[in-house]
Image (cartoon, rainbow, N blue to C red):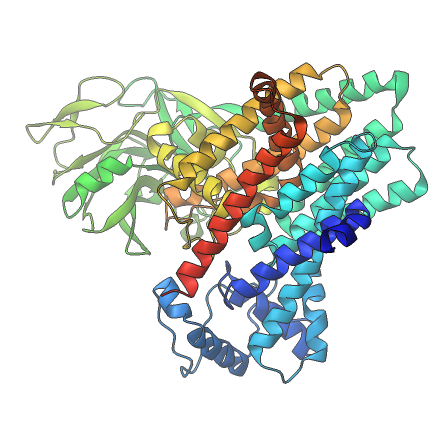
Length: 638
């Protein structure tokens, strides 16, 4: 009876009803405050509803925080996250504050709180979660709307893609949290839908205004979906230049992308050294005074907005070997004119950052300087570099470094090391043979960087925490020894949280290594997607694939590089929620790939299409059962 009534509803209504059921399950199954930064996001929402005037960064209500902390204690927040809570302190803290972030999501999430003033803080939290649930249901409808625009009537993709989204535990869990990522996913999904509509139909005033409106919504929702702004120009280009003019649109688009990429990337910086400077000049220059080889490092003090520096992270295995041991860092340094500088060793240990530095006054001839330190016993990251405190001096000019060296043990500055080659990899110092722990330590090898204009633009777009310098991206991609651990860790964490890892990333799936199975499933989906695209290359709407592809790459690349500051400070590995704005292109790609691979398997095993679909959703249903059991075991069975 229920099944008959359910099937009488049109497909969009059925999908929305299913999303409501699954969404409500996660709204109430996950205990209060057990989502990423949920206390900080809800605080912003509460302040909007309970304060006159718009909250500003730094605003908070001590009494509200105390009530929130009491609720967190009631629901075992300290036990789950292995932390401590004291609601009775004078200035209670709740973690990272979101107050001051872009406003749109928080305004919507605050609407039900106007009717719940004076209610318990936990009830108000659930009310805001229901706003996120509403946004999630709209996203599911958008998924149906996009697939309906892209496929003929009765095509199975119209229900496969939205249903896959509903049955993806990590996504449904995150979309029912109080978090601005929910708004970011909604805004970018609306942008993609508006893009599909204007490209599949005529560029009417209504479609154009919808597209522009979705873009504006992205700009005020969250900075990780500002990608919609440059994509808007691409969509309008292809919507205006149709038919025989489409070739011109492709030529213009590819030309702009190619020229823009070429204009943003430069070659000539010192490879494997990370600049902290917006200087136009490269950090590597031929210099006749260089004690080793032909090249030296260069920092340009002119037109600097902050103290310039250049650093290199050590290989993680090396850091482990140096724990609780003395080290000596040194190099040849000189400048255009007398100016102050610092040799620095930056170490992250115990969740804190410690800097060892040596103040020096540099002249116009190369002189060898050293810095000695003892690496903390719990060191996790260690980087070495040169720093110029420009704020302490009005001097303009260039400073040069060469033959930088880091060794285990104490060494003297009176007798500089003698190197065996221009790369300064091996040598003798104080009569002892050494292997330099730094790479490319005399700047003989060049590497990529970003032009100053691209650095400044991306610096405003990239997240403020942890601190990332945009040119770290091309440098790190060719520094696998120094940065490989970060990328491996990020891919692993993103994969797990994309599928099903809950709470604050601390609640895994039950079972023996389930994420290996999910990794294989993901890889197969991508392989199948490539095959599907190739087989249908002559019939695909390539202008839409371009928009979706740029959105897919733009969003997920942001995720991949988001925590690059971990190379120099406290480790931060991003999770999949930052990439969920690209969930529709991602699921379209993966589901197309899985179905592409199921087809020949079904033909080989003589399995009909309905059974293939049953296998497809049996896998997702099994995943959901494991997800719910994992949550029950973690939160309620202990």
